[in-house]
Length: 118
Image (cartoon, rainbow, N blue to C red):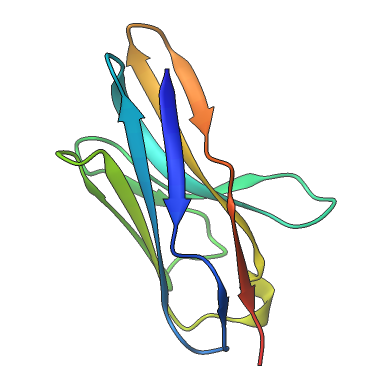
């Protein structure tokens, strides 16, 4: 099993930056891809950024240019740097991890509320 714990969310003003962190803990699972998803009330959750353990990144078009995902494999931690935040970035952001060994499995964190408001 893999446990994910997010941190770094909160209330910020438009135009500022915010960095989310997610620490994964596991005893014997190998974590491959990690990422971040967002979800608005009443809408489906969708991935906005992912990164493999080799450092290959992928971004949703809605965040390209304003968001950077990074990862510290030694700490099993993934980060999401969000710049120039807009009010429409307000959502619950959840951490994601996929393990390929010993079994192909997917995991989600509880999520952190990020509110962008003046």
